Image 1 (cartoon, rainbow, N blue to C red):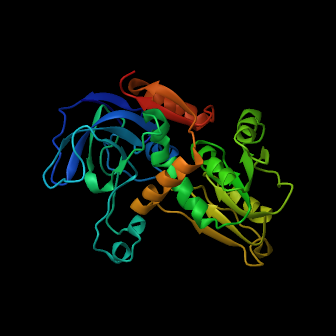
Image 2: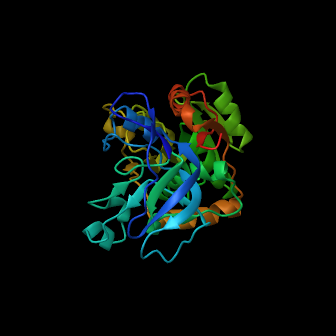
Length: 328
């Protein structure tokens, strides 16, 4: 197999060749068809999220089962599956027992603590893989495995309010905006100042308004979701939501939140973070995604171009999501 491997913090990914691994007990061997490039991958490269190094990144994996290990009864060779960020939970800690496996004390994360999908092949725990609906092509489905899932979890945490703000209009926001619009909500998109292309993209997906992240929307919001990893946007979003409004921080890493006056939080406004995902998030998301007929906008790169895809993500050049295609 061929893979792009991160050897150390801040380094470029390097191509490596390895023997194709055998799936262990409860695992499946997957031939990778597509793997999304997520901002969390950048956080791993930059050392902002601790990882087991060297590591093959990538946790938005779509592929076909080539072989199943012992005690796998739910998947067989030829099945198309998706592999998300949560690679495994212990099942025994208090969080797992309470149904909060996303908060597991001893989790495994794909592309972080176990090798991921920047490769031609990968191994995954069969219990934590999702069947991919035929409605989604491989490259369309890949960003759904994290950007879509985390966006869906954040949207549910935001509540049922009719006016929703999305800060940072990239892979996650462009997917979840489609669901929110389909639900009948007014969506207000916030982009980097001066990014007219992203603002036009947001409006093309049905957003009611789009503008720079340092501006206030024309109306008070019921809730705001922050996908941009910029702590300074938290007090900005608090000023944009109404009394009782919610600010949801959806990223795994964010720069420090600056000091802000208590009056911005007062009147029962709240701030909440989103951590990882559960298998139920995936099951419910793919069901609602088909109903809403969401479509992810992607730019495809050959596997060997992983560093270029990460660089374009970092600089904000991408519209939608980047996806690595090993067969290119």
